[in-house]
Amino acid sequence: MGKVYLIGAGPGDEELITLKAVRKLSECTAVMYDRLSGTGVLKYLNKDCKIYYCGKEPGCHYKTQDEINDMLVKLAKDGHIVGRIKGGDPYIFGRGGEEALRLIEEEIEFEVIPGITSPISVLNYGGIPVTHRKIARSFHVFTGMSADKLEVDWKAVAGVGGTLIFLMGFENLGGISKNLLENGMDENTPSAVVMRGTTSKQKKVVGTLKDIKDKAIEAGLHSPCIIVVGKVVEFNDKLNWFERKPLFGQNICITRSKEQSKEIREKLIDLGAQVTEVNSIDIKYTSENLDNFINNLADYNYIVFTSVNGVNSFFDYLRQKDYDIRNIKGTFAAIGPATEKAIKDRGIIPEIIAEKFVAESLFDKMKNFVKAGDKILLPRSKQSRPYLAEVLKEVGCYVDECFTYETITGELIDPSSFEEVDTVIFTSPTTVNNMIELVGLEAVKKKKAISIGPITGKALEINNITYEICEEYTTEGVIKKLLEC
Image (cartoon, rainbow, N blue to C red; front, side, top):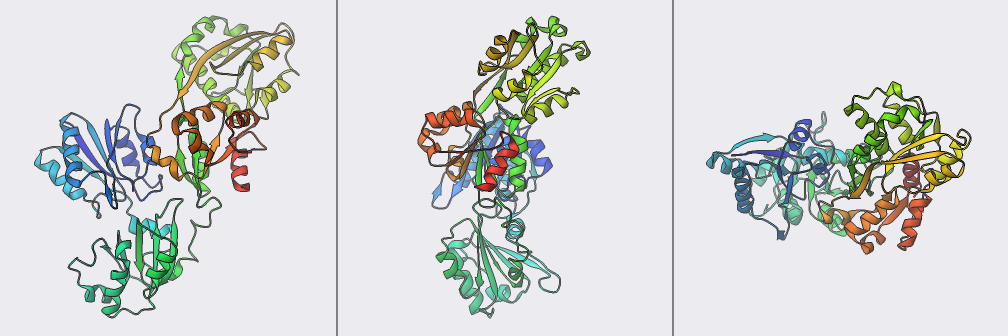
């Protein structure tokens, strides 16, 4: 018998997830997720975890609640550690209690991991605090779904004071307003609707109880939305920190391998973007090829790295072999600042550093150091361009290439996640080719494309994809280009 974790994954911003949820997701062998939790949290899964989409969308229920319950039971009885990922918190209008009760009936062990709930977090991202001293000393959360049919004491609700919050109630916005007005609430009470809060598609409409429905419809809002009624709505502009971020409203797709995506993903999120991570590249390490070179490492005059993956595959291999790097007497060279940093992280200071992330830039630096007869080791990808090895040989160097890894096409977990992307960042010709394979050429052409440099740009040109190119061939260069655009 397996075990089930009912996990609250927050309202949509992939970083609004708890440390415990992240730790437990890494232990799961099967997960079930829905649209409200988003796909960003799936990055915390281990490689072999089975993934099932069981979302329920308005007017299009992929699975009924009974079917979801049955699936939880089956996966657990098959011996899986199951993560049931739910948007917000499992027990706040998330039907987590029903799932837990079914597990108890089947004598299946479970735990509940609370999540950041949308009524508080979405309004926060909309600049609306749910409470404020002397203005709102309480808040009250209701389900707005089928509000016209629920046995709600509207007189009590209209007179309770504080902040009123309605979830899943956009279709019943008119009924909610009508009931509150009929039971004595002032028609000028500040009101707001926040659609898809904490994501790049967040949209907010502010009005009064009397006109909020008309304004929301005119603005094209649709579910999922949160409705809020009360004086705290008046703070929405003054406290509007999220929508003022420079990349707010942008859904940006990064296409690097999982290991290389962290730095740029975090920088983009800090700038207000929502990040769709498609790991179009997966890394297959072939460090065993260094077996043919390990006994001669002390003989090389230069060891040259052209990627972070090359650095990691090389030094991880030496550590596994208990090789003392003090035996290496040669000079280290790096292509670009990211590779330089990776070498420094291993306790080595590279003496030759290319300013740009292209082999031509690295050779321009190296030609001032190398001379005929020098021995050079190039630990790098099997798919690397031959340029650097060729020009070094032309000046009389002895060059040994060792393919310590190769890039293979990654996996697209949820194809629908690419539909909402605005801009795609390409960092190598491989990312271009792999993205075309994963989502299709026409899908890529519909998006704005940014190329990290000219070599990647040529791959885009071959496929007739319009693109912008970075002046600096680095992560910082990509950020600058995004801010420019």
